[in-house]
Image (cartoon, rainbow, N blue to C red; front, side, top):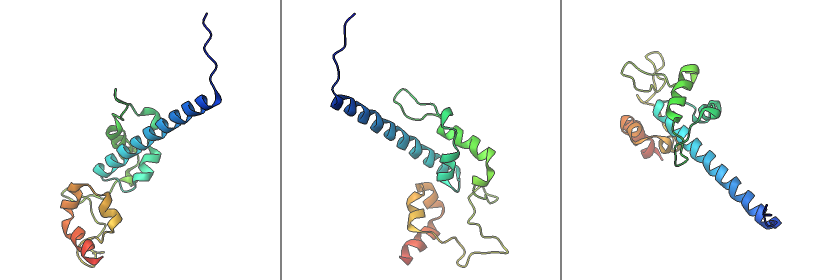
Length: 137
């Protein structure tokens, strides 16, 4: 039986730091994938969706990337319908305006932060509101 050489405290600390950094990176990547999936699905609160996600059910591919986030987010949206944006008859996310409560300018007012979080498809679908928001600032 061969004895392993004793590790110095600095080696253990370095290995612990590497493991901790890898764990943080995996968590951040998982959160990024979850937030992107939430945005694609039209969930109104990406942070709440991530926090409500059953992380024990997340599967990872061979490269260590989350593989089933989209499916888990769809399940979450079915279980927690309050996370979903109100949809109009055409399937597009509604601004919350209604005939009895119309927005002042005919479309929702966006912030630069909201625009940054939008996908290219969402920007294109809401171009008038995006353009108006960018002109105001």
